[in-house]
Length: 133
Image (tube, rainbow, N blue to C red; front, top):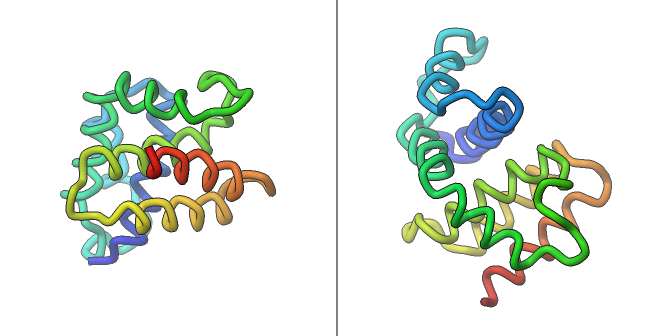
């Protein structure tokens, strides 16, 4: 299983959930039916855990993120940054088997690939403050 690729897909699907306001099971099923990549290397258990976890614990995750935002409101964040922050925050709060540093580093890598120029440092700052809690 490719955890990095699975994490990237989870982030993309969280982004889609924030745009389309669809249930995570619909988003996952739609992805499986329409994906143009080889799905056998993807860890769908992980993806389902993340999407379900963010959907079920969304208020707690968002309020945790908000505590560490400086001069930002969560509703003003770019949706891609928010998807990355939600995934990493879910991992930090609810996935005991994933080291916090791994979650932070993977989030930064996703921000480099999908965010604007300021996204990696912004996400790094928010998540490092969260981890230090």
